[in-house]
Structures are given as structure tokens and as C-alpha cells.
Amino acid sequence: MKRILIIALAACLVFAMAACNTGGGSTAEPAGGSGGGSAVAEPTGDTIKVGVSMPTKSLQRWNQDGDNMKKELEAAGYEVDLQYAGDNEIPLQVTQLEDMISGGCQVLVIAAIDGSSLGSPLEQAKEAGIPVIAYDRLIMNSDAVSYYATFDNWMVGTYQGQYIVDTLDLDNQEGPFNIELFTGDPGDNNINFFFGGAMEVLQPYIDEGVLVVPSGQTEKAQAATESWSSEKSQARMETLISSQGYSPTGTKLDAVMCSNDSTALGVTNALVGAGYTEADFPIITGQDCDVTNTNNMLKGLQSMSVFKDTRTLAAQVVKMVDAIAKGSEPEINNTSDYDNGTGAIPTYLCEPVVCTADNYVELLIDSGYYVDAGNGEVKAAE
Ligand code: BGC
Image 1 (cartoon, rainbow, N blue to C red):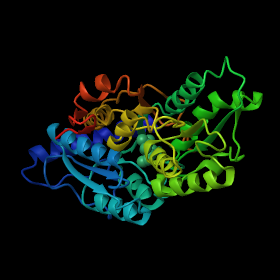
Image 2 (tube, rainbow, N blue to C red):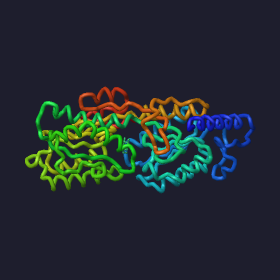
Image 3 (tube, rainbow, N blue to C red):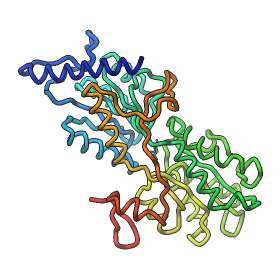
Image 4 (tube, rainbow, N blue to C red):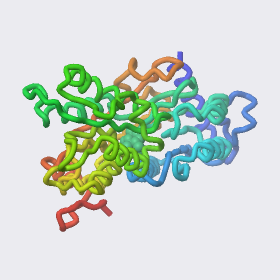
């Protein structure tokens, strides 16, 4: 049903474009114009305007996502309204989306700060017939969401868990090995996949007693880190260090499962502060291959990250926007796993890849994602 609606909306969008192209400056109905649509400004040119809403400027990946989306959409002939919601400010994201709708955007691409907090602009988008693509994070409990594009987030979690299992050789060792668990913002639906995937791999070893979580903090809510904040993960790790007595000479800490790089960074900072060095550093997992974390991997202060090439995701979303605009079906490779509470959202999953100090050159440098800074570090490509 949702797909039929989207195709109908797309047809309206194509019709609107055609009307603009031939109408000598006359205005066209916004995509799927619902008749009333008073909140929606009519497009004034013949170029389709796409609203791209990103959650924060303060984490490297979203700046890359935003830049890539803008560059690729513009190259494909779209006009782009790119907005960052400050530093994860939900009311700002709501206002920015409302402005995009009233400013004539005909497709919205949204990386939600909190997957359940965009009620009002989503209702407006739906009423105005504006297709919504959830970007990276699924938007929950809204039937305004047309498509979802992300990485295989469950796979990200299983890669992190499996890395710990393999590195500690848990299938052949009796242990017990001590581990602590860190995941991300409770409002980000992705943590259900990251944490769920990692725990699917780790739980059997915890059940057998080969892995032990000395703090007892094994629930997702206990492992969560508000806003994915490095300061908050650092503070929690510092508390765990003092409550459990972790140190290179005290209680042994073998691994910290971190769902992403910003949480890993805080954990690494706390461990360095507690006297750990590359010679005795616990296994730390991450995700995103942020510059700082990649350099920490090269220094032995983080073990792995999961590389999610933001260029691939942006390119896929541009293809989705293009298909919608042309009235065809976007490429989808998952129709069952990403239910947002209103039904499974047609999804395209990109593939994440494990990155370590052993393969970063091939993944990050040879692909042009980063450049070699010449001092044993990487830096952002110009
Ligand atoms: C993304 C991760 C990112 C995290 C924090 C998640 O939704 O999938 O790549 O590290 O948000 O921004």
C-alpha cells in the first residue's frame, strides 16, 4: 500500500516537474498535492528541491554525510537545502524540517536525532505528499516514511562482538575475561541493532562464564550513552574504573565493547587517564573510522572500527531520490527487517566492513577516504 502511494506521489512529482518545464514560469502543485496543502509553498523553479536534515555538526561522520549528499544531489541536478540541527537539538531539527516543507522541498532525507520525535513535520510532509527517506537511522511510528537507507546495522554489532570473541580466542580459552559494554543514544533506533547484534554474539560466552561483565551492567539501557557523547562515555568509564578497580596492575579489563567511535573515544580517554598504554590496552571496538579513532588504532589505543563508507550511503540515497523523482521504484534489498511500528519500511542496506590497523590502508587511504598525513597518522582528504 505504502509503495503504491509512493509511486502515485512520484507520478505527481514528475507531473509537477513537467508542468514547471512547460508552463512558462507557472507554479506547479507540490508533489502529490493534497488539495489544501496550505503549509506547503509551491516550487518556483524547474529544479526539484531536496531537504537534507542531519542531526549534528559535532560528529565527523554527519558532516561527511551532509557534504556527500549535497555534492551528489547537486551533481545530479537537484537543489539542496542542507541543515544540521546544531548539536543534536531536537526542537531545532523539527523547525528546520518545517522550514524545508514550507520552503518548497519536494523530497526529504532525514537522519533523525531521536527516531520518535518528529511527529509534526512528518505529518505535514505526509499531508503535502512529500516522500520521506529515513537516512541511516529509522524514523519510528510514522507512516510518513517512504524508504530507509542505511548500513546493515545488525552486522555492525555482530562484527564488533565477533572481533572480541576471535581476539580473546573465547572458543578455546576458559577465561574468565572481563568486559564492559557501551552503546549509544537511547532515542536512536540503531542501537537496538548494534547492541542486539553484538550481544547475540557475546551472550553465549557470558552465559558460560567465559566472559564476565563485572559491573553487571548488561542491559541496553545501562550501556546507553546519551547523544553518543564522548564526555558521557568517558565519565561512565571513569566511574567503572573506580568502582571495579580496573587498572594495568589492578582488576584486569580485557575488552570494552563500544558501539561506535565517539563512545570508544571517551572510553579510551578514561583508560589512558587510568594509566593504560598501548602495551596493555584492553580490546576496544568502534564504528565509523573517525580520524581520531583511526589514529588511535594506529597507536594501539583502539583495536578495531567498522568502516561505513558514507560516500556509498549518500550515492545510494541520491539514486533513491532520483528514482522517486522519475516515478520508478528505488532499489531495495530488505523488505522485512526494519519495521518502524507502522509496518516494514522498504530498505536499502549498504555493507559495513571491519577496519583494523592491518587493512586501513586499503580501506581508507587507497579508496581516497583519508590521506596519509605522513607522520604515522591519517587525516581528512581535502
Ligand atoms: C550511526 C553511527 C554513529 C552514531 C553517532 C548512529 O546512528 O549509525 O554511525 O556513530 O549514530 O552519531
